[in-house]
Image 1 (cartoon, rainbow, N blue to C red):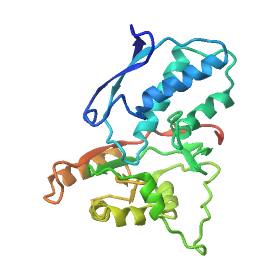
Image 2 (tube, rainbow, N blue to C red):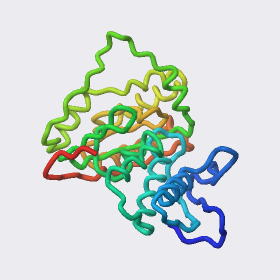
Image 3 (cartoon, rainbow, N blue to C red):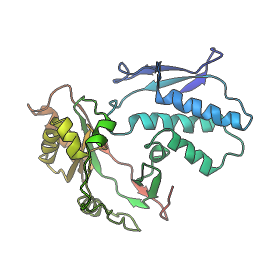
Length: 271
């Protein structure tokens, strides 16, 4: 949510939600991703001799922080989209608009909209997927912050290791079975260095893989959030109940289950 603020020289931000207490609007050189997006849009408007009033933003933080699931990037991307809608920029091209999301960070472009994509490069190479099935998903975060920079510093890929990418079918995946078969051919190279720094990730993955009906379990991004995939929402929610009732599951763990959005387009779109 946003509204014009009475303050004349700065944007303001109020925070609420389960994970809001560990966030601040601005501290020293650190600025919340929402305010960073607002500054970026204001600078772009100034280039076109347009003015953006100072605004007050409200952010309800429901996702863990530094969790490897793009929460902060999604916040900043949502802010850019919100500003573009309510304070449109004259003569803004699609290319320039997309470039702004990359300035938000590596996960900025992929969070510009909620369409499924394959990310490559540092996040700027996005390939659209024309057909993506609706599947069940469970997310688990142990409440441990993981430094992305430290994970990449610990990453050691041998020169002889196969770095090729399996090709996405031009038509996408018509059902969950086809999707799972493809995903089992892929990997997350950040899992092993993350496990070395945060060993509990290995225990979490083992726990997820032993859940009934689990088709695949991996670490998300640079961690520490891990995910398990299922044929449908009901299987994911049943797995969540079993996981929460297990004596091996600390009450402090953040757990969520639900389903992905299905996607169906007439052509493969690159972003």
